[in-house]
Image (cartoon, rainbow, N blue to C red; front, side, top):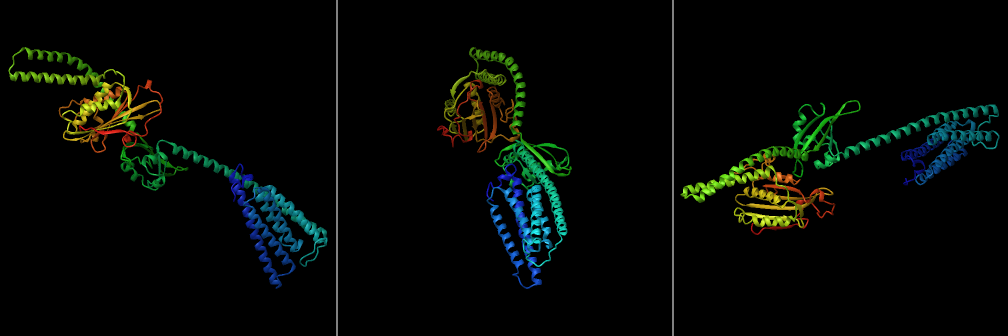
Length: 593
């Protein structure tokens, strides 16, 4: 069928046009079956009475059948190309009536047994054009039947078979009246049934359209949800999942369908077995740590509920899950901030109370050391006292920096230059020189506006921590790149990565807590100070596992104060992890490493 051929019928309802096209095809098929059956039975009956198959009635029947086959063939071909199907349908109805009238004429007029075929033509007319088609067939059938009978009885048409004329016009009129009543009665019944069928069909089409619209809306809503949505059957196998679930799990819907849900999330196997079961009890909630196909560990929150049918029967389970990793990190940062604030207040008060007498003690010892003539033992003890008072003073300085980071002195500077200077200084330290391989992976043009002294303090603490984690030999990598976190806010990401033993997962949540240390002789304030300064800079600091073992500290700091940032074309082309390989990063290995 040629595209667009149903436009006169289906301009507003393509489904109705397709249905009308099928009815026309069915009418043509029924005509072929009817003509073939009549021709075959008539020839068989006639042959049982006389061996000749070339009598005048049979020749006329052959011609009529052949003409009907030809018209049907032409109609089937025209059906593929015509646009005006309504007129085409009326032509088919008229031909049905002409065929039946011709068949009645061939088989004896009023004596023919085929007058009942008018009723079939009327039903076909009603099927094609409802009330109009039924009454058109009835009216045309009545007129043609009357003309055939009148022509035969008046001698205007010759009989093709030998029958006796009735001669009694009252009997002829009675026959015509009976057929007239039968035809129009059938037309009334056919029009009622077909109109009822059309109304029911339109309602069914509209119901299906609304159902399809509702299903499409429901499907779009589910697929547009940012939460993962999975439906399970009674055996716990996946029957569907939305786009968010597919993206989170890395499995396409076609691949996931039919798989056991517990195999996709093995951590849920026990949770799904403990009451209340998701397929039986009310909605329940649980959370797991899950490793995705890319190796990331995510915090997933699951909620499950029974999936019920229209009559309340249990069909399976509905599972909704969300990635709450960032939310949990935010909660951890808030808890740490609360702890740090409390400890900070205590530290500030204690530091002020201790620092003044400590300064007096240190000064007095220095005066005594100069004034008194001490032997070696006493001098050694004096130097120990001075060294320890210096260490206490440094500890108190860290206390104060942790409790109340110094007010920021904002300056515009080039981060790449600052990091290179810092690396140049650091590589000459005894614990670094000839032991630590120092590598810089820096993006060009990293201009920022913040406090450079506070930033140096952050980097000194992180570098010291990294060097202490590699007492023998190792590799220390410093990376920096510009990120774009929003339309108006640009962020610089700095990474400090070592190849030491790393940080166990069980203590990662406590690594920034004040006084927490895994190293003998440490104060436990170095990383706490880093956390507090970064927080004061409106940034964030996280710890990750390094590529080759060890730990990686990732610091994100606004490149400019928010009130000074303006939309600019983003010069970056990829994430920080690709800054050396794909974005023209200035990467070098420090020759002193």
